[in-house]
Picture 1 (cartoon, one colour):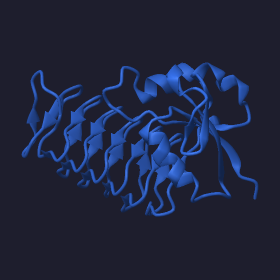
Picture 2 (picture 1 turned 90 degrees about the vertical axis):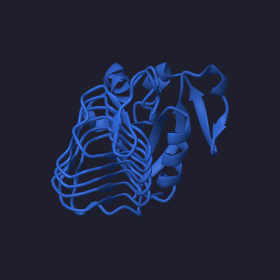
Picture 3 (picture 1 turned 180 degrees about the horizontal axis):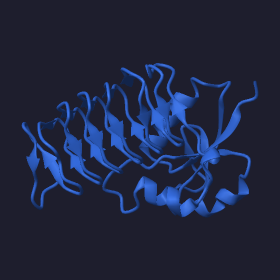
Length: 215
């Protein structure tokens, strides 16, 4: 089996995590480079893979699968915004699943990344361009929309809804049946016991809205 060339968009921490995962799948992926608009990175290596230039050079690599490695909820350009800007068909986007992942028959959207130790306990659908960092837990009847980011060890009880581009911080826990609105941010270690409205930042135990503060 000939591995497919893989081009990463972004050359930060998530790109390094993805590279570690794809190197455990050498028959599936051949990482050929990264593209990043940070000029200081051009011509450098990220864990042995060259940063080939800015994102505008994507057209030079028509045969490569592409993965958007933008993870930080507070970056000016969200992952879904960048995906929309690039305008690629779904079949160009890679889906990367670390070998140490339990998916239990889940259906994964294009561009999604599941890193080591992620567990999805029952068959369900995960949206497009979702990122789950190590040891995330997703359980029965959860709904995960496009562009969601789970930091390490975030966990969902059953029947939780997570809206588009929401961000769950490291170790955050969400009680069964709660809803996390689109673009919401849940701080690290937070315990969510009620619905979090779209666009709000909540933190604490139990989680409460923050006003003019950072999670």
